[in-house]
Image (cartoon, rainbow, N blue to C red; front, top):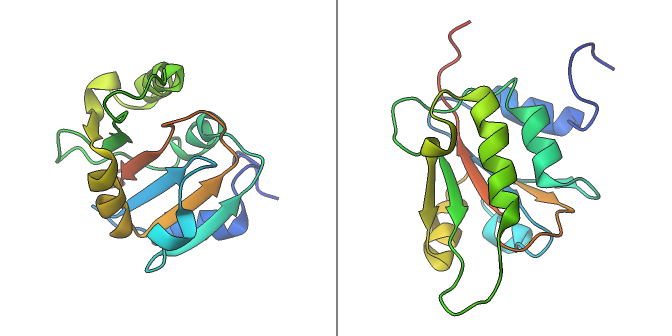
Length: 146
């Protein structure tokens, strides 16, 4: 165990977060996200039973978001005509506001298949137990300055 680090972060995930460099991306995929197929060229980490908001709260104190891009956080857009609501996005905005001065302004959106394509280039994919629909989120790492 380590002091001051969330027990939700496995040794494998901590190693990956540490290995990532400026501009590298990590995907936190919901329970429906095709983590293994999209992440076949990346490292895939299991975080079964853990929700994405909880992981965000654990990751963001350790992980600076990229300040050199307008949107270092990307969400998967709801497919037009799909009647799904995305209240988890409001949760993400609140969590991000605690860790980035841009708050919800650092969030961009990608169409579903464009999100998958972007995710294929990620350094890592975390397969979570998140049950909310359209809860997938991609984070781009910034520069550690402290």
